Structures are given as structure tokens and as C-alpha cells.
Length: 228
Image (tube, rainbow, N blue to C red):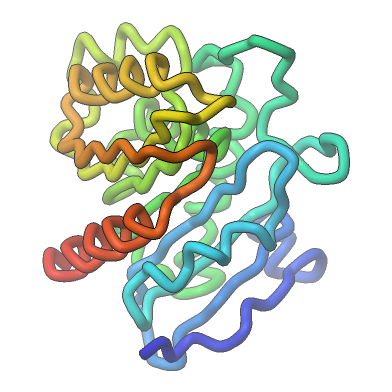
């Protein structure tokens, strides 16, 4: 059973100043340092939408969800993507830098264990998570990427197998109208070539995670907890 309290909104004050991003945080009622999951929402989302997936995370882990950098329609995005554009790795640098700063601040602000930081991203949030790991592979301990994609121009990371057996859960939808299944397969191939320890799951669904996907995600997190 979860022992987390209700996620708290942080939009000003010292915690916002330290982390640099508006966010919600769900702190365990036990003492740290904490294994931590940073949840990155997709395009048009915000710091509220990712909590649907929080119940899959093991109890007594610290969970945070930052807000994207750019106002986009009625929400926020990490990259103001143009129609039919698939951003390159360098085009996500601004967001990767912001999330990296956010992660570095978590140990002093929330007593996160810097050696046990995970990312969970949905759609464009998954792309940012993959981009961050490809640039800074030792910063995180694993990634759950949900119906997302790997940015273009990752040749150097692939060449040097920079992910070095990093555990990655990748969920894709065979009927996804936003992330074509072929691109999802190409993304999986790129992650494998970059050296990831990839758990690839394809579901007969659209741009969402199915009930079976939620079960598989929870099992993947449970396996990570056993490794801690």
C-alpha cells in the first residue's frame, strides 16, 4: 500500500528557486535518501497529468513531475514541435539542460539519492528522457518510456553504445496515430544499438498505455526495486 501524501504543487519559493521548474512532488513518510522517479509529461500536458502512472511506482519512492518549458495551446511542452517534425537530439538541449538541473537539485532539496534517479516519460516526455540518457547516461538509473520516440541524430551515442546496459521499459501502441508504429520500432532499434537493456512492449492500442501495459510497467518497476 502506498504511503505517499498528496502531491504538493511547487510554483514559487525556495524549492522552485533551487530546482528551476514548477513541479508537483509526492514525498514518502519515511526518511531518505530516496529512490526517485521524475515523471515527464507529453506535449500539451502539465505537472498534473502524469500522476495516473504513479501507482505503478514502488511505495516509499520519491516522485516528482515538473512542468514543461513552453506554453503550448492549453498546456505545456518540452519542445514546440512543428507539424510532421521529429526533433533532433540537439533540438531538445534546452529541455535536457533544464531537467538535468532539476535532477541535480533533488538531493539537497528533497533528499533524493543521486545514485537512484529514474525517469518516466510519456510521448514527448519520453523523447526528452531518452535524449537526456543519451547525453548523460550515468545520470539516471533507468527509464520508463511510454508511447514516445527517440530523437533524430543519435549516431554518436549509438556508435559508442553510451547507454551501457541502462534498463529501459518501452511501451508502444501498434495503432498509435501520433507516433507511427514504424517509428516506434526504429526507436527501439536505436536504443538497443546504443546499448540499452530494453524491455520492449507493443500493445494493440493508440496513444495511451493499456491496462496490460500498466501491469507490465508495475512489474518492471518492481524488478527495479529488487535491484536496489
